[in-house]
Image (cartoon, rainbow, N blue to C red; front, side, top):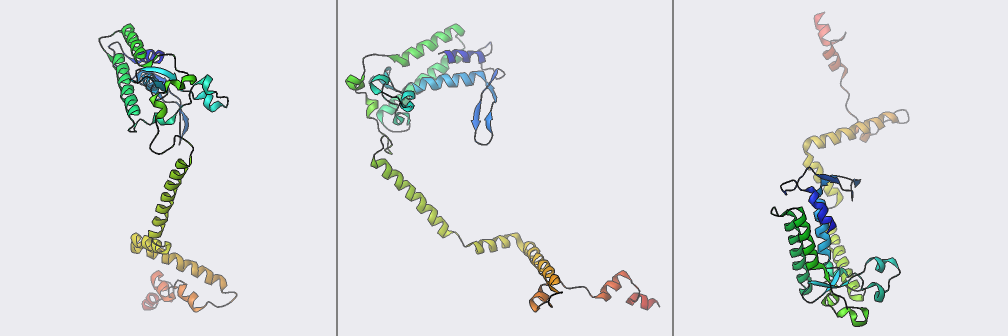
Length: 277
């Protein structure tokens, strides 16, 4: 309720969201690490308030109609190494967070959580209510959906709530062999798909040839010129030790005849000079 009240600071005088009223919001992202963007106050605070209200359904045991809390599930003590269920309450159950499942209890909680969050947001943005009236409406919504009824303890098995019987479709509710076998099956399917993909892929030499073909004649000529230049350099380095072999000569770039150079430059002794004489 306090967070929802703070969200009202992000509204203008007409009760409309004021995007210029911003606050720093620190979060961590995979590529950049810690960042602190400035986000609109109303969206940050109202989003947190709605989230807390919605979590009041999957993190609790409730009456049959889902409107009243009977037991709050425990997470902190459960993972802290000093958990005692009779003292601390039942442990948090991940199965209750899977609101997409077709279990009737989860469907009930999903519908009620959506309704509660909608009523909270509607009260915050109701133009007919002033700030004080909106806060009163926040209190009414909280009491309506987060009311508590005592009497459910470990001695009576927490009143045997329907939430305690919820299981999910992939068997993660326990560490038994069923869950292990199912996850092993998924792993084998993934490995099989990877193996078939590699078998269907062409050899690396074919992929290189296709890549060269896609680059066209220019790419092939460039690669041939590079190979010829490299072979010529090797051959030149071997002259002192031995003559170049036939394969070396084929790889060496051809030198231009001297008479062509002379004709081009017009050097002394060239055909042009002799003709002039």
